[in-house]
Image (cartoon, rainbow, N blue to C red; front, top):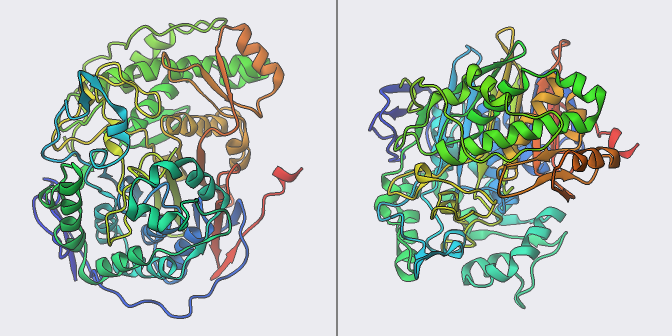
Length: 602
């Protein structure tokens, strides 16, 4: 019998948790497990799947298969999401892994919602001046190497989630992924591209180079086999000994030793003090739908709700019928207003006051009144939301998203990350674990942009034990009291706008899920950038936007979105990002059903 306590207690793995007095007892939720034998691999992959028994969508076929296997072996959506997540840490390690953090939104079949915050935490020795050299902020220090990492939280969340709402154990989820790490797998084109772009920095860290580069220093190429023996051993140690091995034992000790030798500040005490926070979700409405998002330190839930509140005052469908340029213009102007508020107001709610008034519909009406239907405008500063209290604990492109649902009515939206590609570029010697570079998501100095061009304020300043602001936006859509969609994305601040567009495309434009995710995307975060638009956007639309005064930056790819939706026929539809190499798989009658999308080939 396994017990997870959120309230200063410990689980059998030795993890300490947040101050909530909730005790959850689950039968058969121990940390250790034996490895399954002879796992059947069924069928072929597809970008789009339809099924009635459940759905798993990730950016990598092996991770999707791991989630589907969990469902087929009697697990629920939580088991499937965790199995997929730890597999992604092996096969998609440039995006996520147990050296990073996550936000996990669970809606159980009984209607209760858990918002589990596994965001990384700054070490106890972190200060707001730690990245300042010679009076100037040095973003290289916050993005690469020993000072760039916070204490990882993903592993702790996976353990808590399984104990609270799953059926299996963390060990059962880890062992298949350990096998893949040890046997190796052929890297895909996206992995190879990320390696090529970061090879120079990776080469600075011998342990990382030993794993990810060839003996002559060149990066692995598409189709090359990546073997991660140390990571496999780490997964097996956690499966055998529990999360205490990571947060209170060997991994924490190895990390402290490396940090001490390389000018870092994280200690084993920082790992032992990590806590999972149970948050109160952000709940809003949009044209009769209920939108459930993740609260601060995520900025996603707040600003998806805020932008939708503004758009609710416009007939978005009519704007699209008039011209696509007019729709894009209005939505982009709403984005800019929200990002101005993000820069000023958002931060870790356990340290600063983040006003709930940001999601007030009256406040949205005031902001929407600033939108000129014909001209792009400059947003000089943040707005002043009404006083409605502050966010806090519950009761008071280099990321990845997992979308899962099961036939029992459990839904999971899980977004997890190590921040930029391969995080800090540091693999802790002997562990295979890539550490995040999440410290760059703090405002390391006033007016200094991070790797994504975001500028923060005092609320998001570096501080000991703080969680940096995030754009991760795991989201659930509810109608008639039932979840009908789970959606999330990767891509830094574009996560927020991708989720926003997926929702608007479905609700406002009547798109099916595949069309909603295929439609050309755009993003505007205000003063630091222009309006980013995908190159697939029609030429006439681009000219219409330029004519309204938008400074356009045309890009080939704008993030990655994964989603699952259920139709009136009670069939799940899963869509993996159409622009990448992911896969959706559904479970029906004990068999896996998949459909390759034909639309992209037409």
